[in-house]
Image 1 (cartoon, rainbow, N blue to C red):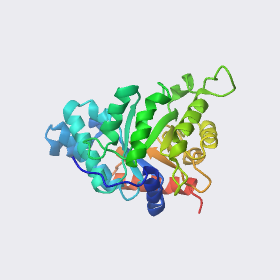
Image 2: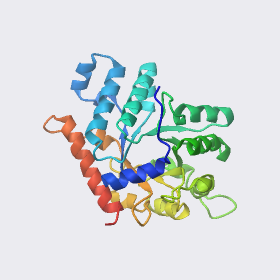
Image 3: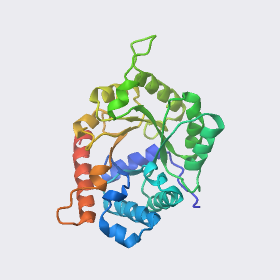
Length: 300
């Protein structure tokens, strides 16, 4: 275990990374063994822990100069059992040792002591799975998020609560109208996120410790979410492979270009490499996404 010395609020640190790197790019790390270049498989010799660790570490190395943060999706590690979880722990530790910000894409959501246990696992300084922020599922209500809010506020961590997601099925529930008003479910969820974050707004950035996930695939919902949550930092998936554009993502930002990062995973993990040089291809893909997103989302 390592001891965390990061006490500044996560979203203050993320804003500093945005300004320093001129980047609003969040690079997802979703290792799919069948798509990992053969050279990694040869070096790993059938050791899945080494395969996942080496691949993820090289994504950090190649995309690091261009990314404001990284988002490893734990499911791609969990599916490989203990070896996968060891690789996840090693990778997030390596990222944080390089002063790269890490969002653990875990999408947990449960009540009472179970939520407290999840919060301890990922947000407690020195833990094996310690990350800088996590994604959460709000379906069980505000009390299921309370332990995460408390732990995040105490430890300078951040949260991203699912509000309006990027998948096609988001409309099945999130776009439904609430019976007693004209609000949609995602708008009510946004209000809940705002209320949870209100006591934890940074004086430095004006951003709360409780953020939201809002997909780029529905610009109308993105604009509405930003209007509804002026102090809420947003994580914006759906750019690139899912069809969202930089212009679609731009509606999720505050007028000064702050308050959001945009995720890209497949396009950077598995970019076209006509010359066979995967490492260079990852760097090119990350730089291209960084430049396109910053130009679209951040005013001069």
